[in-house]
Image 1: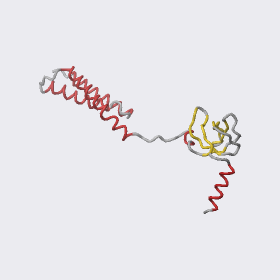
Image 2: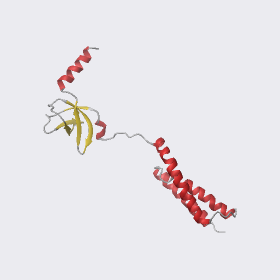
Image 3: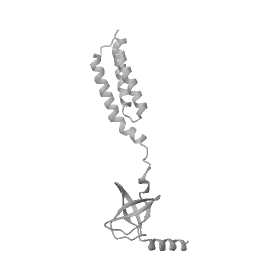
Image 4: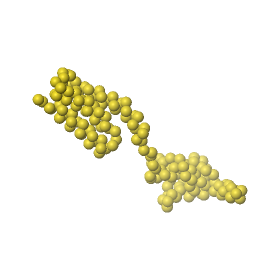
Length: 164
């Protein structure tokens, strides 16, 4: 008896399981299913004496089942295993307001974020003390838009507090 193909499919399954455990990126999980079906074909041929076409049919079955699982299940599985992106660096400041440290000249100014001075690119005329809202990061600078001057923001805050 020749157990070569049974061993081959067992090794393919073990390798795919190992790779998936190490990476958990849904890359090789689909090959486990194809390997199991191909292993069943090899066992039926070897132990039950079935004539199913030999190793070439097993390879075709492996490829078809693996591709079917990959194309059919991966998009569905990715939806449920997708983890939310958590901002961890300078992108945590997107959407926040900051006070300009200098007048806007040539579309640029600067803001202080956690004691680090950042360059901001702003469209419009703004003065020192005006507020901007950071919209995105481009290279080593923030792209921002105006959020009003410091006087109008302060008076709006006072009015809000007085109305309480």
